[in-house]
Length: 100
Image (cartoon, rainbow, N blue to C red):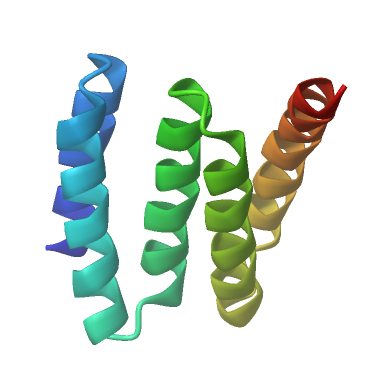
């Protein structure tokens, strides 16, 4: 069921309906955490980071990525850890620009 929430969140994100996407990703996180599906929980946090990135909330996105990375480490999801690093590399210059 957790992955169904994630799929609904993905549909909402594609439509740029960020409020709905967040709602579904949080439901995914709650469900996946409850059954100790750390990969699924990590995916929800990764997707929440994407939502925050799209909305320009770069610090929040980085925070979500850190949580996702911890969960992906726990579930040994190497590919998803790499995806987190890619998004993080995109965000860091954006945060530096805000500081300048």
